[in-house]
Structures are given as structure tokens and as C-alpha cells.
Image (cartoon, rainbow, N blue to C red; front, side):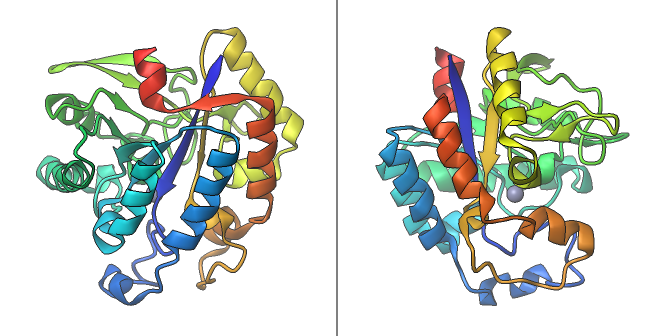
Length: 275
Ligand SMILES: [Zn+2]
């Protein structure tokens, strides 16, 4: 059984809701740290001969086209993380569509291949009662075959959303949804397939959860970011919760990834989708 490995290709300053700390008008002046961190991920994947899906932010593709060339050159799948890293539920349908198509056409022009997958910044197709399911219709209408933006999580998703991959019917045909790996707790589901959860929980919890998914015939979806591999990540004065989410035990990511790559088989979303 092959699991899914995904990377959200964004830089260290692409953090949602920090406009008051680091306005997006300053992004162009921030140091780009994408390439060295991306190289660490690509080297690791090539060591294990694994292909992964890279959800590339359009802004990063435009600022650092070399990143897209490196990923594509190694035979990985390029998918879209939108262009400007703004949560979907904060955009109108028109704004979302413009952001989506800007990233899609940019990536397709650079790779010469069709982009069929999307992941929203911060799993933001839905958050609590703020429903932006319309985004799935727009994705299907514009040639996307899968999405990975609905997290079965309490604070940044839909607490009772399905935890295994499922198909959503839209007005423009079906779209396959791939939720990130979570574990249940008395606080509700907690993320374990990436970010702080991947770094904090004991490895055996993650291992057992993936086996559980696999025994039900489903892949586990793992995610990471280039900055998770950056031990010298520039620290900005974030609120404590974001500080924990972004920087907590950051050095653990690489070690966890190596254990996962040793213990499980991984591939792209596209390969799982088409079998
Ligand atoms: Zn992101």
C-alpha cells in the first residue's frame, strides 16, 4: 500500500493572519530561503527513490522559478497552493478564481504539464461554520481532479469531516478529496500527518495511524514545508500559538521524515488517483 507524501512549497514568511506583523507588501524584501531547504527535501526523496506531490505557491514559482524546475526535473508532481496564500474563506468567489487560475497557468507554463491538484492555504476551504464549498465547484469547473484542503480538525477545518479520502460531487463533476492524517483525542482530531503534530507526537502514534488507514484500503496523507527543514529559520515575533505551530521542535521534522520513508512506501496524489 502506497501512502501520499506532499510538500507545500512556500517560504518561511508565508504564515496566515500575520499582516500586522509582516505585511505582504514586504514579502519581496524578505530573504528567500526556499532553494536550500527544498534541496534538503529533494535529496531525501531521491535517496529513498520516492516521488511526492508539491503544492507550489504561485508567488514562490514567480519569485524563484528555479524551485519549480528543480522539483519538476526530479519527476515529482507539481500541484497548486494558490498564488497569494490567502485563506479561501476570506476571498470572494471572483478573488479565489483569479488567485487559482494565476497559479495554475503559471505552473503549467513552467512545466508544460496540466495541474490537476489544489491545496488551500491553511486547509481553508472550510473553517467551522465559514463554508466555502463553492471552491470545490470552481476547482472542478477549471480542470482540477483532486483537492486536499478540508482538514477534519476543530480549529482550522471541519471537526467531523471524513478522515479517509472521499469523492465530492460538484455541479461540474466529481472531485476527489484527500484529508491530512489526523488522530482522535478528547480535544477532537489533532493533526499528526505534518506540521507541529508530526514533530510532537510519539512516532508510534503516527506509525499506527498510517497502518490503520492502510488496513482500510486508504493511503495516509503526510505533509511538510521547506521551512520545516530549516534549523536557522528567521524568527519573527509571532503570537505564542503560531510560534509553537511554526517553530516548536522544528529539528524533529527531518528525523521523522526519514523514519517514515524507511517504514512506508510513498508516492504522489496523482499516482494514487490514477492507480
Ligand atoms: Zn501554505
